Structures are given as C-alpha cells and as structure tokens.
Image (cartoon, rainbow, N blue to C red; front, side, top):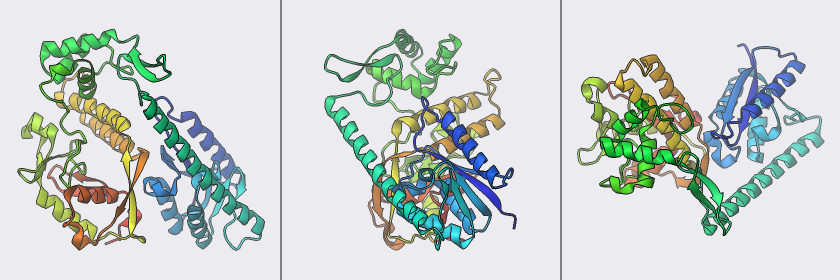
Length: 428
C-alpha cells in the first residue's frame, strides 16, 4: 500500500467578514515547508476542518480530523504536518488518541514547534511537555469559553443588538453605550422593497420586480432571495403579512421526530405533514410534481430506514453530544440556496443556471452547512434502540440529529443517511 504524507489545517471560526483565507494560506505554506524538509515534495494530502473548534466536546464536527485518524489507522499515512499543536489537539484525550494511532502505524507528527513525541520516546521530557501543553491548551480553551459567555451575557443584559445589522441599518452605540441599529446609507432601499411587495402582493414576484428594476441586492449581486425580501418586510412593515411569514422548508421548530432531518432530491429540507403521516418537499409542492418529480415520503418509510440504520450504530460511551447551529449563518446559506433554486426552477435563459450549476450549488450549500461551527452543546443520553420510539417525538428528533447529519432522498424517495461521524457506523 502506498503511504502518503498528510497536512492538517484548522481554524475555529469564519464568517463572511472573516473567511480566514490568509490564515489558510499561511498554514498551507508552513506545512508544505515542513513536509519538504522531510523530503515530501509532492503527494501531500490536505485534511481541513475550517470553521470548527478543537474542543473535545465537539469532536463529531471535526469530520476531516476523524478521516485523518481513520487513514492513519488504515496505514495509508506516513507523516502528518500541522501549523501548530493547537491546530490538531487542545485536550489530553485527543493527544493520547493521536499518539496511539501514530505509534501503531509508525507515523510521524510534525509542527512548527518540532516533532511530537510518540510514546516510548527517547525524549521523556519532550513527551511530558506535550502533555503539559495539552493540559494548558484545554485550560485556555475553557477560560476563553467562559470569557465569551460572560461577555455575551453582559451584552444581553445591557440590551445590545446581537449579530449583524439588518438590511438598510448599521450598528452604532446610543447615549447609554448600547449597541443598537440605526438607519444606514442603504436605508432608502427598504422602502423600495416594501413598495415592491405592496405592488405585487407576493414575495417571489417582489424579488423578481427588484431584479428587473436593477436594484442592487444586499452584499452585492443582482438577485434578491426570498428570505431576504421576507426578512425586510417582516422587520419594516410586518402589518403587510396577514400572519407571521416564513418561507416553506425553513428549519422551524416542530414536534415531528423526523423534522429537519430529511433532504429532498432538489436540495430542500422536507417539511412534516403530521396529519397525513408524511414529509413533503415545499418547493415541489409549489412547482408541482410534473416539474419537480416525487414530492412526498411516508413517515413509515423514513422510520423503517432509520431503524435499519440504527442496527449499525456503535459508540464506546453512553452519551453523545450534538450542536445547535448558529441560526443566522445557516439562514444565510439557505438564502443563497434559495436564490439558485429559484433560478433553476424558472428555466429563464437569462438566469444562466443549468442542471450542472444547480447540482454544484447544492453540493456547495451542503458542504457549508456541514462545516457550521456549533454554539451550544446539548448532552443527550442515548437509550436502548428498542426504547427509542417510546420517547417524546422532540426527544427522538434530538437523538437522531445527534447521530445523523441528514437523510438524503433520491428522485424515487429512497433514503440514504449521512452520519455525523463515520466511526459511529459499524460496517455491514
């Protein structure tokens, strides 16, 4: 078997304002230099967990790190290179796991700080220092989390506006020092959006009208997403909606156990229809089965598949941790997908969205959703599979989403699960 050198890159947080491109290139250049010093001038395979914390409690989100360990255990890797040790681990448990995998398969691990001691080392002082570094890394991580939580609580208590300013507004401090929204340079466009909805009486038609008029969309570009238009109207003219409006397919709270879990072949999240005991695609419901293809799957079909998949479940401990993702960042990704879906379904030659481009945008959105960092940890006790279905439906939903990232449905509504951590699935 050919063994290749591996580069591991990681950064804890990125967003639209700080994508971390410079950090990525700096890490990549550093690991290439380290690999070249050992004679590895080519065939360097990169494993990258971008926008993922090294907190051991969030290990399930580090899918590339899990793949790195899997390839080390399979004997496919000869050496690992990283910018610094805290890019790979910030906890003694991760250090021990990494050392065990490296020792069993004679893998070297190198960072800018030097070669990591791999058990039974001739350098006991170096091995001790590695453990001390891991202990202090975890301590600093916990202190940082406490500082962040305290700062967030202080902002809430003060009444600060949290997150990004809405379209047409900017953030500023009032006379009491609070962060508030005030009208910004683009505030005049808010009235244009509201008038477009008053004229058309439809979010979809309003977005198309704004595009025909050449009104620049938020963050650049010409396309106005349905979510963007809806949010602007809800904030500035809520009385125009007869009820609180939400675009179909949004990840809204529900009591259905299969909610937020199934993804249609068109890329939309399936919505529960508990009265009919099925999940349906909101976009397919809107465009019709003739254009979209099959739009529903029965609850029994989903459950039968989930029961069969859980037969493969394996976990060394009796608890597992799942993440509640940052809503604003997820909404931005879904809004971007909405724009491309609308263009694809419109079949307008001016939109320049063909099937190949649509499939690429779906894949990009899924990758971005998978890479979302978590902001809250929910500890879930995993029950005996035979008892799982006796739980309340919201609890079943939490447990299943701690195991599966999503369940993709083919054009024939055949399910296929993506596990949060492939190591949790026992092979057939």
